[in-house]
Each structure stands twice: as C-alpha cells, then as structure tokens.
Length: 485
Image (cartoon, rainbow, N blue to C red; front, side, top):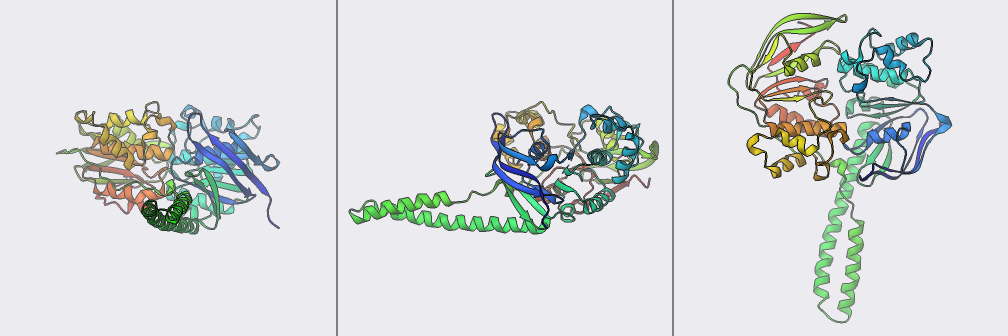
C-alpha cells in the first residue's frame, strides 16, 4: 500500500516584493517517509522553498498543505549571530513554547544522535563550524519532527561527521528533504529529487538516486538543446524563403504569409536554455608579488577535551607555498585562520603589507549591508576604481549579473555569497589566500573550476576543506595536522 502524502504544493506562487517570482503555480507532493533532495542553481530559491514549507513565508497565491498538521523541524545552514552568546542549553530551550522538565535528558539524546560531545554550558559562538553544524541538526531532531528539512547539513563537517550523518539518515524513518551540493553525500540516501527550475519557476519531480537523476536532467537538457538547434535551422530557412516569396505575386505571397506564421510558431516552441545548467567560467586569481616570508607559524592553539593547549610548530610560507591544515571538528582549525588574519595570534604572523583574500565559513569578511556593486568596487585596486566595465565582466564570470548589483549582500543566497567572495579575490589580487571551507554552499558543478583556479594561483595558500576530492585537485607542499602536533 502506498504511503500517504504528507506535504503538497498546489499551484503555489511566491516572490519577494519588487523582485521576480521564485515560484509560479508550482505543484508537487511528497509521501510520508520519503528522502528527497531539493536541487537548483545558487539563488534559485531553495531556502525560500523551505521557508514556505515551514510556514515562515506565505505564498502569494496557491496552497501549501501539510497533512494532519505534521510537525516540521529545520536544520538551517548557520547559527544566527544573535544566538552566539547563548549557552548550548539555552539554544535548545528556544525551540520549545514550554520548556520540558526533562530538557537536559532530551538534549543529551539529541547530541548523542549527531555524535557531538560538548558541555551544555558551552557558549554557542565558541563552537567550531563543524560543531555548530551538528548542533543545528540536533536542535531540529529534539523537536521529533514528522518532516525534517536539512539546509546544507554537511557544511563544515569532517568526514567522520558526514559518515555519521549518512548512517543516521539511512536509518531515519520519517520524511527528509535536503538541500546540499555534496553529490556523494546525497547519493548515499536520496531516492528522488525536487528540481527547482529557475527559468520557469516550476518544481519538477524525479525518482531515483541522485546521480541517475542528474544524468536524466542532463540528457533532457541535451534533447532540448538539440531541438532548439533544429528549430533554429528551420526558422532561418523559413525566413529566407519568406524574404524571397514576399516579393513575388499571387500564390507566392500567400505562401510567404503561411511560412511566416509557421516561423512564429517555431520560435514560440523553442526551449530556453536553463539557468540551472550555467557554470562559472574558468578564471585566474592574479597575485600580489611578494618577496620574503609571507606567513610564519611558530605555535598553534588547539582544543583537546574542551581545553586549549599551545603546541609548537615551524611553518614558513613564501610565494607559491601551499599549506593544508587538517584535524577533526572542534580542534581549532578555523580559530587559527581567524586569529592569523585578524592579527591576534601569538604564534602566527602575516608579513605587513600583504593583501589577504580570506574566505570565511560564515562570510564574516562581507559587509551584509553593502550593495554587491560597492562590495566588488571596494576590492579593486585604487588605480582601477573607475574601471566599472572590468568589474562587471569579472562579476558576470561568477554569475553575478547586472540585476544583482544593486542588491544588498544580505539578500544573496549563501552560494551567491561564496561566488561573490571569489569574484572579489580576482579584483583584489591578493598575495595570500586563506580559504576556510571554500566549497561550502557552492554548486558542485563549479567546484572543478574553483579547484583549477586555486591550483594555478601563484601566491601563498592556506586551506581547510572537508572535501577530499576537492583537495586532491590542488598541489600542497606543506601540511599541518592539528591532531598530531
């Protein structure tokens, strides 16, 4: 017997005020117990769709139906900065209208489910990115939801964390909808895809594992492109005949009129190339030429058993040096990079005058109140401040089109913020790239292009990444394993 439908969209339309529609009369249904991927290009509206499911956003028209008032829990991409000062226990308590008497017991079970061992008195903002990712999932699980929504759950997780999450999802017997750009992770448990087509604002439903669905979509696109090519040829042939016959008299003129009508019909039948299939173009990050020791690392602070320890090391980076930093979640990788860039590290220093391109997990280097245009312009060298044409060309390379230039950065999707960061690096021409999980939020189709650009960069590089397939595409000559110092 088929399982009941737990969630359905009935001709749902939605758009933010003064902006294009993200959904237009979209309809689909999800059966209870399904494990689905929500797929679409950066900025297509995937997180917005989660907001509609959760009820935080209301459709412009149409209906979102949740069967029998099924409960919904969401693991968001990042902890809100306004919650950074809360303790772990206070953060869990926020999700309850009435805090249960056995909250500590429930927290213990939720943390165990995500394999996170932290004191409940810890301050949320002091947790590592990977620990925060597990905490977000635990907060969703403690609500025991009928529908679990996961927004980029593997971001910042180490491989052990990803493996644990996969095992959990395979065994989880309730409905799960996941947004993720980690293809291998998705293929481990997904059984279908909700595809958000940002060209026609519809939801397309596909059945099968992730890789088979991606292949099916690619084949469909090839068929559409082939159809377009055939129609374009016929249209051009007809136009030439129309021009020839229109100057003739009698029956020839009638034939020209008929061919013109056929041509218009063929133009209407052309299928526009989907925006989802666009990838960023190959690019080069120019580097600031520096002679000497760009980075010196004499000691690092690591966290073991929730206590900080200072460990001696000896790392020296010059131009073309590449350092890979590894270690489990919570050991202090991101803290090391943040303190290095901010100049607060006692044992690690950057040469004065070095331009640093810093990709932070939480995009802390971006001014969310600035417009996209002004943020890009601020990255230009002073001598190039008036070269707006160059700025726009670089931005377009990263799918940051003219219609986004006037938007505040806070209005961009997380994936668009990531691409914006790389566009800024191209304009900035840094002498040092400090990359903390640069694959977070980025569509997997872009990753080979990012890896190639990083690998051909001629300045110094420090990288943290939980994606082995991405890391292996980049040459490294220095390694810092924080769990072994």
